[in-house]
Image 1 (spheres, rainbow, N blue to C red):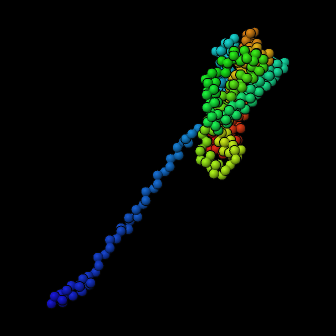
Image 2: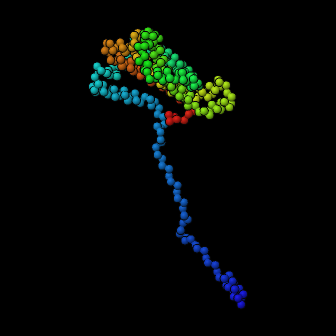
Image 3: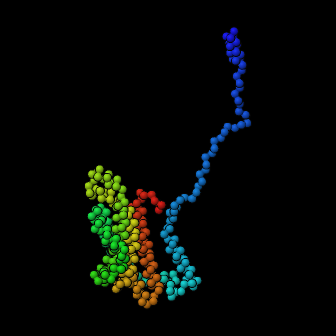
Length: 299
């Protein structure tokens, strides 16, 4: 009996239609995925793209302020001559040939001191950077010299070397030596030690180590020091040419001070400024070419 009942229940269960699956309404659309957030185009971090001839913006703005002040009468001509008066004075000095002669004498002194200072600073940096003993001997005196301005040594240099050209060139050399040494030595100490280990693994010779590891590693620091050295050369030149000199831009300015010729003094200052700007631009160009493999904010 129980067997018949259970069999009947199974048959009735199979005969019942299955419950229909729930259907999605026809007007209901499939769920959409949330759209990814839009990337907001903000301003680019950093200084931005290079501007052609950006180095001339500041000098031109300064010249414009000077011209407006002179034209409006805000600047006394006895204290600061107008730009057009300075230009006319420069033309007269060029026609007389005096400006060229003084410029050549100043350039010769500056280049001589720059060459000696760069060579000495580079050699000292290599010795101190590659030898602990060399660092102990050299670094201390150079740091002492760093704290003493080269111009403060002029009285002592006059006693040692007189008031001739030797004293002037040595003063410029001392002003150039320190920045070249400091930055080159810092570049040497900043070389990754893994490169040194790799050179030892490859069994590079001493010359190969200097050529492939030391010089490329120290090049960025050396070029940075060279920029400071060029500026130091012109700063030292301004002073030494006013110490018993018979030629040079500084001598021309000192002579103009005696006679109260403000326009001639300004011509000398403009020449010094242009020389410094031009020399710094040449070093920066060499730096950009030599370090073209680096990606920096200056690119």
